[in-house]
Length: 359
Image (cartoon, rainbow, N blue to C red):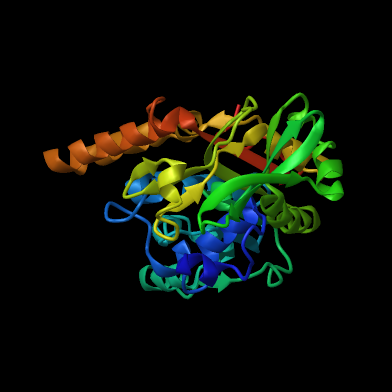
């Protein structure tokens, strides 16, 4: 239990809400999961779309150029990547933008990263002077702004609640008298109860996952979009129809891990939850942003021309390269892999509505 004593200053039987517990396990400086290891790639714990295929990042680059054109080719155009991982996406974007000189002159690129370790990894991969790292959004003063997050929202810890006899209780973790970690519940705070009741998405649910910390991040982002115009594009694994159970999961060495095993490997495994996309849509609309119809990753990438781009590239490839491209495309697009499991949402403040990649 030495690890717990480093994470928390608490007495035995102290109730720790799920989001607070996971936040410390993932992000506490020096001992949190994202503070002490690079989780990305074959040797890490999970693989993201930008590390699977450069085609994914190229498509995001093309989407950004098309969005800039749709809103009138502004001379100043901000792009902020939320949780940039190992920097793979931004590295490809920089190469892609070289094909669009006018766009390249207008764009300013910012990387928003919480982990000092990951910032250092990103800075080794991304060496362009066009890129700046930020810890908050205060530097964004003018110009339409596009935020982009790939597997960003799922990594923000969530609160969990359940109803017992029409009363709402919050799920917590507790260290018991035997020095073991176990789950427990406490009566939900009045503020949380009031807020949860404002969302139609939670109606008739007995088990609720509420992204309070995630919405805190989105509050800051929504204000900038409302003030400067632009939007936020999020791609993540999640669901549209509400799920009446816990979606928290752990991943270690590219394999899912049971929660019971996770408790023995805290700080060594990633902890995420599925994203409730209809709840996101409801949140954005409440904050006076327009929202495109939610689509699957497969729909978005294919509508943006990823197959056509692959067909152009294959003429210059040998058999080994072809096999690799086909396998990575399958992973991105197959409905039983990332294609349908991952969803795409775009919330925006613009007179233009006809953005590419959507219905």
